[in-house]
Length: 249
Length: 327
Image 1 (spheres, each protein chain N blue to C red):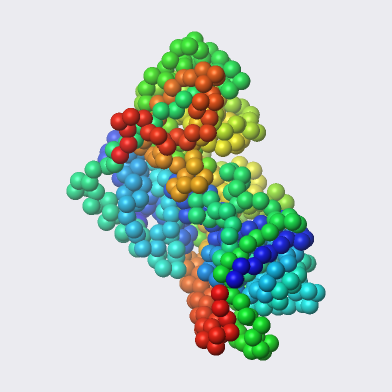
Image 2 (image 1 turned 30 degrees about the vertical axis):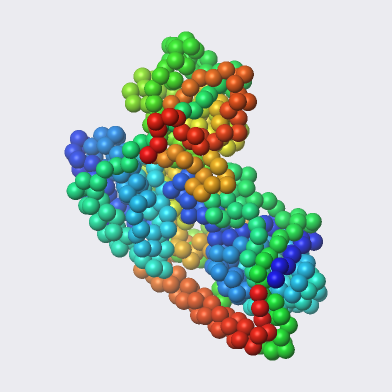
């Protein structure tokens, strides 16, 4: 039941295609990237509030949701029908959850942000101007990637960032990094090729809590520059454990 | 009753379960690569299917049980001995207090599972004990490590237990020298000329670089790759990717959640357990099947497991009724 791809500029619709006996991929097609992101996000959020028989889990990416199910109790076409019924309910007006806002203290540059000077030079900005830019507006979490990494974008970011030609074998936990039009935070030590501009002393997840993270796709994160001397004051706190005043659902 | 399992030998073993269902929150699936064997071991030990258990990789493991215990060993063929006496795999086994349980000589596969009846008091991350490399969670079981198991059944040394109390249908799957993986068409199959035929024309060889993230399979593949970049999307466990190199990657439970390589096929649920037992250098064949066939295979396997679960439940209830067995 794959829908024909609509003409560019047309409405955004969700196409579905089977992935073997236990998964279906829903992909937003048509329209512009923002519309496709919103369509996939709406499905992700709606799935979180619904119980579809046999659905085990799903993976939310920028423009798609891969739904996995237990083929012992259901099958792909049943899952597709249930998901489409959910979306039809939405069409008659269910408000999307209000985004939460978080503030993330970041020590920019130096050893903790080794790529900051080079990136500033590439964008034609001074280091100070680049830091001023990245701390002057909210980043929107597009989706939560592997190892609970928030993958974020700032609407209208005036530059695109080249990845490293050879990825680092170890990017330290807390690193704030850019690639293309995206910004991410590495929650744990991991290899990676994004350009590192700083590091946060704040931990993104609480291993003793389930869910381990308090942020979700659609939420906003504002980076706030702090001095290295302030590191210890923030170290050990978990992002969102004490939301910024006035924030929260 | 609480019992302690003290690790006295082996390596490359860990505490494992069926994994996490938190990919929507950015956590990997992880868990036993042979899900059926792990679930079966727990069923045979009178546990819930997703109970924690020991996964022993290649080398084997040896533990000492402080009290009598109901255990089961499944997965790749291995030699199970209790105080030196051989005992059967894929069957419930009662071991006396102080017994040494040894799993060794794993052949024809990579993973063997050791289940022990009771509630395992072991650390969890997001609801599962499965190791997660990204978060540095989970650890190799080494000599000196102790696992506490609470509410274990006791008074198992009932006179009846000497006789074949548990009359159970066989659960062990066949293990041919050249295993077959059942596959279904992936979303990018028709974007690569000739790949549909190439996947089944000749066997593939399991590359030694295969791991918990993916099984790499070398063989004859078309040289062409689809043009254009694919926007990163979620990938299912079992997705078979065609990277630029001359190999296939069957994604396993430790995969990254998103990827952008063409997915030419998806392995069946049942075949994933077969893939989880593949040895480096082993020859493996792929076979096209329909979603309906693969679904039916999975349901058949689970029905057999369900029948054994029911039989075990009845046997344990009967023992409890005699007052012989208590927690």
